[in-house]
Length: 170
Image (cartoon, rainbow, N blue to C red; front, side, top):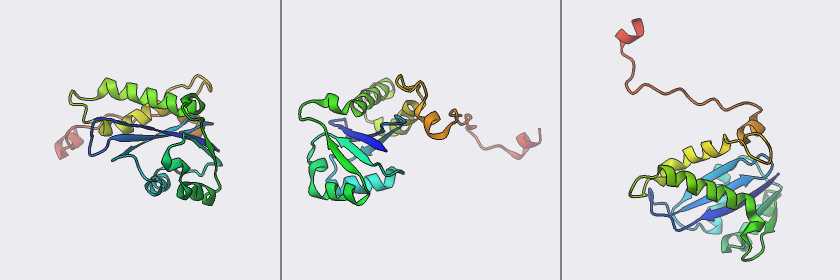
C-alpha cells in the first residue's frame, strides 16, 4: 500500500552505474535496489518504476529531490492512483525506512565489493535477496515470509561443469 524511496549517490562507477534507487514496501519491508547510470530524470524514473515494481502503491514517500517534485512525476503517481508524501527538507529521518535500507545496502556492498570497488552493481541482486530474507525487527519476520507466507529456499549450488553421460549413469 505504501512505499518509500531514496537514492544512494556518488558511488564508484560499476557497469556504468553510479546510483542505487532504493524502494521499500512499508508493510512487508521488502526492498528493491535498482542500479542507475546517473540521477534519473522523472521520466526515466517512471520507466524504471514500471519495469521493476510489480504492485501499485496507494502512497509513495520520498525526499524533495527534483525528480520527485516534478510535474511529470506527480502526474505519473496520480495516473497509477498513488498519492505523494514528501519528507521534510534536511530531515532524512522522515524517510527512515529507505534511509535504513540504504545503510544496510551500503554495509553489504562494502563487505563484498572488490578492491577497485567497481563490481557493486553485480552484487546488488544478492544484497536485495539478503535484505529481503533477514528478519526485520518490527515484524519478527522476513519480507519474503510476509509476501509469500513461506520461508526462502535458496537454490542449491549448481555444478561448475554440465553432467556428462557417464556421470548420469553412475
